[in-house]
Length: 534
Image (tube, rainbow, N blue to C red; front, side, top):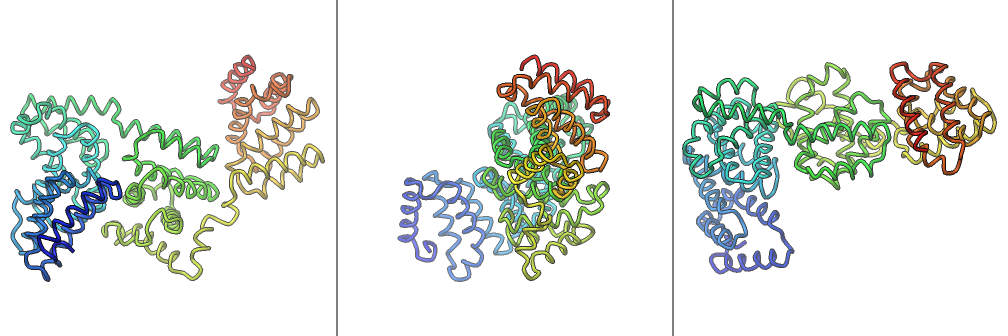
């Protein structure tokens, strides 16, 4: 509106934006996003207002002077205006655009906007210059922002805005410019080594690049960069350490599903910028699970929207789709499973309804990616799709953990009162949640410890019958017994003989082969230490 009006309206707009930010009605991120959209719409605005480019450049200059937006916006307006006039791209123009994209990303953290901006630039053969400039900007930033810009480059590759070869060429250009970069960044060699390590770890650069560094940078500097890379790859890198922590948290989640606790643990890692790795790991681990556990995963993803922004979910799903061919080797029905996850995420407002249209075309135009896109479309567009999608993992799978625990408690209690072994086995089968078998074991053992000698025999008889009937897996017996042992100190407060009775259950379980041989020794050691504590 200000650009259409003239200088008076522009000054009014400046005053309004200053006041909005001063009173915290609008934050820096929203202002940056708004200016980015204004720049993107400049060509259309110029059709009605011939002087729009100059006016918007002036307004960007004023806002930068007031420290409301990055100075790079003024250059972005000039580049957009030149693009509208059909002016050929130059390395300098591409470099200015790269600086603007980098600065805007550090504020907004929107990989989608960055990728769209670069695709519109259509840098072609100058894409390597663009990557080089983004990484050069990172050398002047603190470690956290340097990691963010490395993540941006990885995101651009995932979204198809640039490819790995262009990134590798961009890194080569960066290395060749080290003499100049060292003037403003004395630790440039060390920082470049960290950048290469990050991109190698994220599978954006091939490990073979380390062999070429001495040739590109010179023997001494190239060797130093390679030394830094090798050193950082063994640290491990922040992303590597984060992946390990995430895997441990999620393994515990699938064993003892508690969405609230898991979300709190993930939030406690304080690594929001790696949220895409959490999303991807949830999806990949779920491929090996049953529908009930996939339902739990969908509920977890919905709960994680309070921890991670939409960009992280978008990125996580795209990264999973990119690896679909490899995932299919272990999960033949991967297309159907991922399509269900995407449709459910759309229904849960985790992903936007237009998600599939935003996925890079090369991912969904052929092969399994195309099959996933077709399946998602079929699920979303069919009549009564909302109810069907919400039950995409089966109606029974949507029971809450609390409901399952109550069902287990009731059937175990009925077994100890009535003594009907076959009926108890039938009830466990009807629950249809084999992943929750550990709760049956724990509840049966606790009830036996509370009941005394006669109840101990009933516990082992129930567990043995469930194993023979195929309603309980050996891994669930082990997991359930471990959970029972961990709760023994509290149980001893109400049942003084709890430790001795638990020891009897373990001994009988070992004799009857209910506890696996490889786990037997560790379980007995664990039982001994817990009993001593108790």
